[in-house]
Length: 441
Image (cartoon, rainbow, N blue to C red):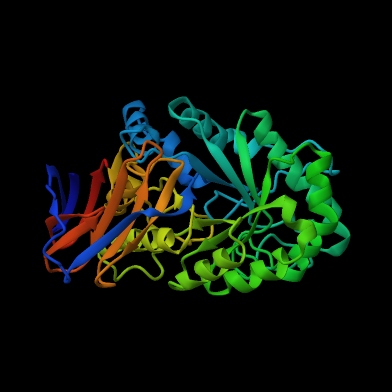
């Protein structure tokens, strides 16, 4: 079995590749065992990706040609993260240079993509030259004039008399990107529909999201030839994922238009919410659609702690039924921006102090241990672990190879074993390490 290891130590990263060898499971090993069950096949894994925001695109444009190539290879080449998905905002979000909505006045079917064309679309085209992309599109706010508070900021709600126009607006925005040659399999109705933020935000109750979808968006998707673009429900933190999605999806008439339920990580673990939702509606794709280490509450986290936060989210997500993982910004400047709202955060890749080159941060390596080895179309496998102090998950790739990932965020090395298909593989897992094992049976 091939073993790929990354160790975080004193601010540096060490990587190595080795082989570990099996012995027959005849010793009745009981302690420090990680089990993989290749016959317990679970949900498909659709892929990995990151958000292509205006901020990421601005930072990208300032890189040297050499740094641009390195960035694209690091994220989208099969030798790097092998990303196949991107999340894009409809209009501005906090990771924009300023507020904008793309709305032509008076409202018509033509969307004003002047902001998108300046920064975002050129980056998307460069990414597409390396690997095809599938897009998930999400609005942070409707146009200000269509909201009860007459502002893109500070929450507010969508005026009822504007629901039909807003459904058309969303569909026209998706069509504009599709006309640029991009596949858009998912459309969110509202990013974080329960949050009032000082930046672009809008409140959408589950009842309103249901009625908007039933009475307006469903019909408008069909009228615009967008039957293959499925709605992603919720798109907010996990603690109310089950409640919110169930309020909408229990209505059978909207199900043909819905493809996924999206969730974020900012309110804690709540992985059982994924299990509950997946058990009730197994046909729904569960998608991690945003997470980052915010400067406002991550200042005390070490770089390795930030990396293991990703490892936990992906491992626990796979084990709880998630199929798709999309990180927040793919690239930011050295200060965690630009962000017109001052809501700075880290990204796995950040520009250097001069802004002309890039720096690979610790979370990148954590993501690599999953996205580089788990291929689109893989299936999650049943696993068990001896302790919650170690993150562990396994998948079977389309070619039949089994991939297992072990994350050890503790400061102690562990002598443990992988048990799979009647064989045991002993190995020593270093402290503060990520380990990916490849096994062909």
